[in-house]
Amino acid sequence: MAFSPFSKGNKGRKPGEVYAIWEGDRAANTPGWQVRVVPNKFPVLGIEGDTETARDGVFEEIDGVGVHEAVVDTPRSEPDLADLHPDQVGRVFRACRERLRDLVNDRRLRYLLVFKNHGLEDGAPVSRSHTQIIGLPVTPITVRQELTSTRQ
Image (cartoon, rainbow, N blue to C red):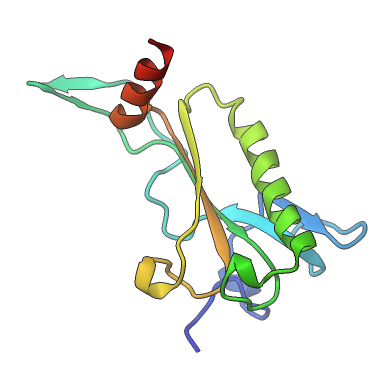
């Protein structure tokens, strides 16, 4: 079995949670969680930095500033969201919704995306069911064009 930073016993190798849903009343970063959100161990963006753009010829440059979080869908080792009980799937959606509600308040972020990879062959770094949240300081050009087209 491949290493999973989400598995029980790997606590020292996990970053602290930024949000969690527990069984009953529990303190942060303790056992008993049902869904937890942690900073991604291998983030494509960093929370620190400048969001000012700079021009380089026809190109615009911006630091890799933003948010990259992992939503651990379950404390158990189910490999896919489809394997979870519907109540647990609802908890995953609730955790994503709550993180988006919080992240929308960060004025540096212009675009939020929730996505899933399905298994190692699709780019997921671990086989356990997890979801990812990315917040960017810019709106991707394709999304911007679709929004403009929809408005027109």
